[in-house]
Amino acid sequence: MYDKIFQDIFDIFSAELKRRNIKLPSVSEIAGEDNDPYRILVSTLLSLRTKDSVTIDRSKALFEKAGNFEDILKMDNKELEETIKPVCFYRVKAENLKKIAKIITEKYNGSVPRDMDALLALPGVGIKTASLTLNLGFNELAICVDCHVHQILNRIGVIETKSAEETEKRLREILPERFWIPLNELLVSYGQSVCRSVSPLCSECPYSDRCRKVGVAVHR
Image (cartoon, rainbow, N blue to C red):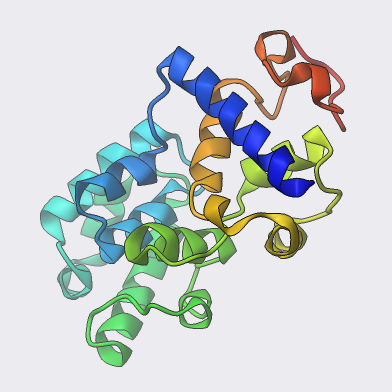
């Protein structure tokens, strides 16, 4: 049953995104350059609560100055803050990047660990960042759940969960493995362009007739 449901979601959403000529999310665009785990981890951290255009611009600016975590360690704190500004919470993110750089340099010889628990132990790294790093940086099977994945799948009525953590756990039970890696990219793009968090474009969505619209008070 779930195989058919998710295949339909992927087919319908993908066709609509193609029709709209929607670009990849910022981290996916950055990962497409060389799939460097360092770049993916750092850009994902910068992307949290930040617009894609800002994430791409500031990530590239940082990578011009720091090509690895050793370079981040050498940067002055003020310079690091100014380089990633105006990403949301740039001071906190700069502080976390410094801490992460120290841990990875000292504990993992400067290489991003290919392990979920090790990634989650890093300052500021949650399940989304860890999963996306494993997905794009190491091509590991992991389900990256952010606000778009959690909200859209609950809105459609495929799952009934209260948090991103619950969603990730439930998806491990029902989501066919072939969809684990591309799920986040698809739903982030669809959530930004069609199934928006506030006033989704239901009249333009080809999946609307089978969507339960859970929690949708206003739509267009």
